[in-house]
View 1 (tube, rainbow, N blue to C red):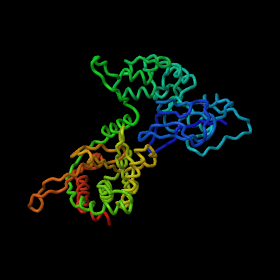
View 2 (cartoon, rainbow, N blue to C red):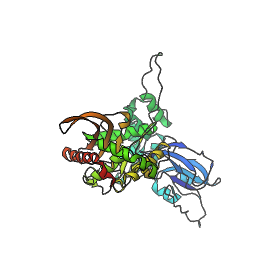
View 3 (cartoon, helix red, strand yellow):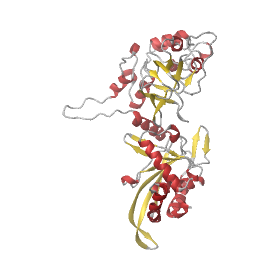
View 4 (tube, rainbow, N blue to C red):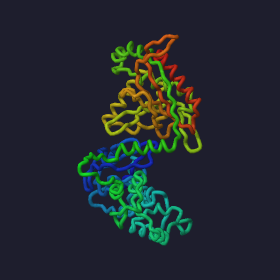
Length: 448
């Protein structure tokens, strides 16, 4: 019996996903467990496996469509059965005595459940509308969700006259993706000519309108699409910068003892554990222990509550060719420097080989971004959305400093802490940095 395949929840904070690629075409035979399509979440591109075998009868969510979780993406069934009932939101045709098929995978639901989950596929914001209103809206390229609060029917239900009135007002008809791109690019949809059904504005229309004026013939440029991971990173940092008032504190740390300690143990660590211990490993351990004494730094603002986490799930920013990704070391405070070193290398390799999973990226409570390898002295890192603070790590360099009244050469490093001033004030953030500095300047205790 045919089943509707829905977009699964691939992470704890995932609300929607954008279809970036289909590995199968309509009519293709598929086997349970093989890659079916690729979806771009707010964190990473992920392949979604086929939850069952059959024929891919219908692709509902096209490439570049952004849809909420649990919304239909495709229909899988046999080659000769009718799927008209599913396409219209009803039941598939089946003998009266046949029971709905049970499916364990969260990305697939029986037809009855699919009808319940998405009984109003045009209504992603749960705006209730009459059948005639839906039909008129669809014919005119209007999203029913745009009429939220405008319904004049019983209990605020949107009826046909509400849709017609909305159209008469000269409402701009655009797809959800086109509207989102227009918001980001600052494009006024009223000035965009739509080429979609019924004159509806689609993605390409907005991109054309947002394109800069043609350059002189003598000027050449290579065009890089503002999409994929780069676009997701842009959305995340914009959201963070606009939501959380950032304050950045910088302190200088004497890493001379840490440099000497690493020289002594690096060979033994590599022989015993198969990894070369790095300064980042020391910093992760020191930061995790320090966060236990400063729980407000290891917290998250959720609605009207501040959640203080008992464990430290340390995010480590990893640079990729087209952006960056933040795998998470869970319970970092409970792990030794060697365990942190091994896990950090494994996560970085998975990220660079595109084998990272949603579980590897979920649950972070604090993030470290290390730009020391690029010779950076000071920077203002942007807080990962859903967290309270992020630590920027800069280069270690030999500098003349005054110690015990004498000018000596020491290995110095800057730490830059950006924090959400809604949750943490300057003094508590400074105390956190001060304790972290002390731990790094006496690094032997990190190995105990």
